[in-house]
Image (spheres, rainbow, N blue to C red):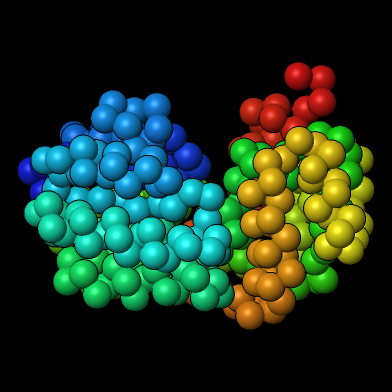
Length: 279
């Protein structure tokens, strides 16, 4: 398959949920990739600007994924600085992984657009994989999920769908200047999501609503890093307030198909045994 660029695609966060999936998809299309991470060579570190230029050398396009999340203060400025540097080094194609209902994420989007690059925005709902590859896994294994969330619906999006969209926009023409809002096909509350996981895994997993203070203390007890504790508290308290309680059609517009339902994610993930406490 012919890529939109003959040079490699730099995938920031290339070992993360969406980045590693994207790397697999681009490799399957015979598109060369460079992983942007602290362990890569050349190394890339969001907190070390001196590492950015080397990672960008001889790159044709970049998938920008900010760690830990664009909601973090200062994230937009870092993304803007990086995007401007990329364009100054000859990179024309930028694809930004963004978040719904996050002011800092939307600020990042505007800074990427302002570079004059050929941009595409992937504005995503909560990842389904947060239940199997992130902080909620510990609670599920312990048999209890406690979050400061009211019964607000969230259209959880599968990381496979995000990677499919990213691979499409990075390998084919026609996606420049597009904002794809990526969601799953239905709204679920966290209570409903946990209930589906419990049924599929054959386990009794409790769910309760707690105060933000109790939530942060429980995450810390599981050994969750402080920056992730802050981030999850921010997202639950300020973002999961109903502002994103609707479905979007980004997957359909980008891929011409329906997004993966949460039940499919749960069935496939349960089959791996990741929620089996015997492992």
